[in-house]
Length: 466
Ligand code: GLU
Image (cartoon, rainbow, N blue to C red; front, side, top):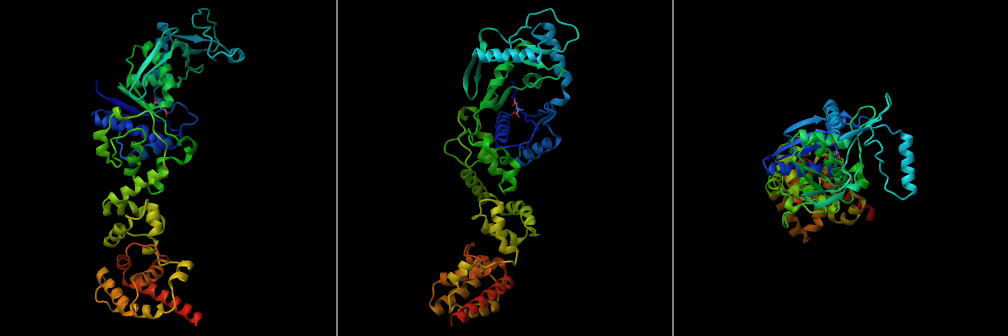
């Protein structure tokens, strides 16, 4: 049986991390098995479904590198198919018209509540033939009255539900529109889906759907209900894939992190998409996903920042730099900055903030750092350093270092005493990559201008002390 799986989002919002994990497990399974990955847009809820969310879902899947092989199919375009199937069920006696009014249903519900019984439709119309003319009706499926349904879930193992738990749910509303649990079955069956892989929150639906498969004479697919991810539901709005993209997370890191929410491969933490495709299987999908862990996710992203090739990372960095007002292009200098900064920043946004002094002359010196490091007496040494740096033949990290080494020796001070006030002058603070690499990347002109400005402050402070 060829493997055919589907991702079936409802276009009612952004693609969040839980949805992306469902998509990924379907995608990895399809690729691992040489199968087909189908996209189906479940837009039957006309009020909440919006075309722009379909766009957003496409954009997120594209960005994450999950290529769709077939689709998208839109449920909203398949109403005629669903209605024809409902008619088929009615004719075969596997579904029936129910003429209960909302008031009658409400009264039933209240009675059940009072008597402490399960609130379930009474099935009064299941076998009645005295159908009134011209009154509105819904169509209900005939669920089994006895026995039990067992599925052998790829993740949850065997799960059984007794017939007493199942109700004759509505498959066509009184306006003729089909309901969700009905259309999903028809879609999965007619699209020849071999494995239905979705969140465990759909497990109850599965048991309601199986009688529909049986009634329509369809084969029941294999199911895999993925464990829910703790800590996601409360933060729904802020958990979209695009949200993390805009925070400067890399797609490799998103894929890597969500792959581990419920799946493992020994102790390995970092995976490329190719490795995931190679290793993925349901034998290692567990019944728990664990908690969504922001720190771990950030760590995975930091690892991917280091792993990416400088040019690739620089290209992905450009939009973040542009957003911060820095219009640069990928050149030797930018590659040099990426090489030193990617080891220290955990996201592209963090890297933009940390590297601002390479792109902007608006460097504000931190007051505390100035107080701590601009010691009286330094102005004499810095006057010399500025002069020597101006006279350097060639501006390389090695030549710049030679100037500093010479002044450490001449004035008998440790490098730290000169390095920190230099950093404060050129970056505003005491945190930067290797000093000589930083000065080299800033270039002679910028370095000297900033050192001179720092020197002026040193002199002012010395004069104030005197
Ligand atoms: N449209 C459903 C959802 O977004 C998915 C249902 C399914 O996978 O069967 O939760």
